[in-house]
Image (cartoon, one colour):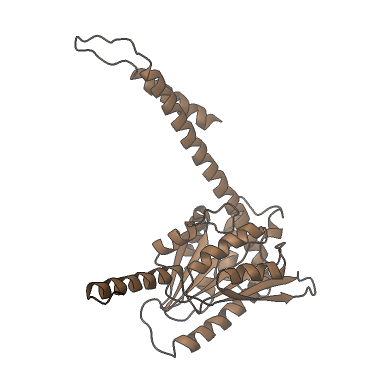
Length: 333
């Protein structure tokens, strides 16, 4: 590992130069072991930092390869998605899109189309139920898109004014995709915003809390209704699905929806529905059988039945404050 060796040698040379220290008479006294320990600490620290950076670089490289596979697989031959074509063209000019190793873990074009149809049906129902055709300034509704990367919904779909689209994917994938889409003039619909969230939720090893932290930094509001579109997660285990639902449900307020492509997941419908229900989401399974070369599709459509965790915390604090105020006024039991 040349990078590690070079870094270690640099640290050793630097520490060796500083191993002695001047006395009051201009002489250097022998080291008593402290410098040697400093060398060891510096070497271990440098090695750890280099290894961590190399692991992150390798993970980002894998994420980009998987994003290209996902983009190719979700592209429809019938639909004219000029943005997807631009992304695939840029990928082919780079290091290409070879192999099918990751195809089984990403969503097909038919599943992607089904997700889009369901999302807009739920968006229309949400607006009719809660907004009553009232003109809204700022964020009226939120769309959270979770894919392997390279999603083009924010630019190809006619989202209504006041919609904020939060797209989650690996940071390197975002960088490469953003550069290509900017070159072809891709922009979200008028009055909408598109925000790139640098976290790959489709992975198995995502830390709990990363999603909430990154979303809220980008302006996501847990008290505003949202629609979550989740795909490219066919490799998720039951434990990963459970962890994701626990975190995402806490970020959704009542009246929000989640649409998840579970076509390749091993867990049964009953187990998945129980996981949704445990987090306050009423879910139904939608199955589309295979036909004319189309792979079987299994989607879950969930409806949030309670407020977000932040709202629960706020209401609890208000109750405590009201009780404290009542106690101060002499109305305690």
